[in-house]
Image 1 (cartoon, rainbow, N blue to C red):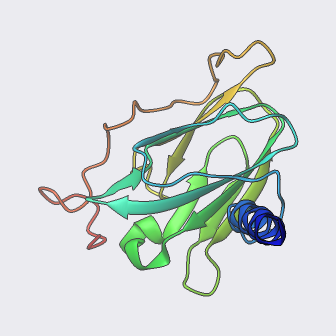
Image 2 (image 1 turned 180 degrees about the horizontal axis):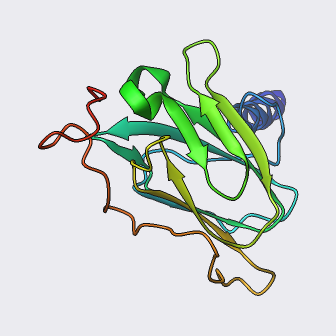
Length: 166
């Protein structure tokens, strides 16, 4: 009987440790961590924290789309070593985000409180990312800002490009 109790306690401890490790650097057990997706779609509850690892691959942001519910806290953890040239500055139109990504400062966190489609780009408008914020009904309304479709736009380094070397 004692062996079963010890095993049950160990399983419970490992389960708690697993969920705590998924909470992200903020320690928030309500955090959702996304990784390895070209399009990150999260049906997050308002007030929840969504942790999105973001990198630059071949001049494009990956994931190229981040979809969250209105009221979600978005925490972007940029892989700084992939951000080069003009892509080092991350801009999220409509949210006032403009951040130089460095190894020492690679976190961008904000509340997605405005529904719509918002561009994620470098300062020159390249990178082709989108932040899609669902309204209360789960739809993404039209945004007043121009947004390129994921996988389009930018000519960084191709045929003259921006000259950033990225």
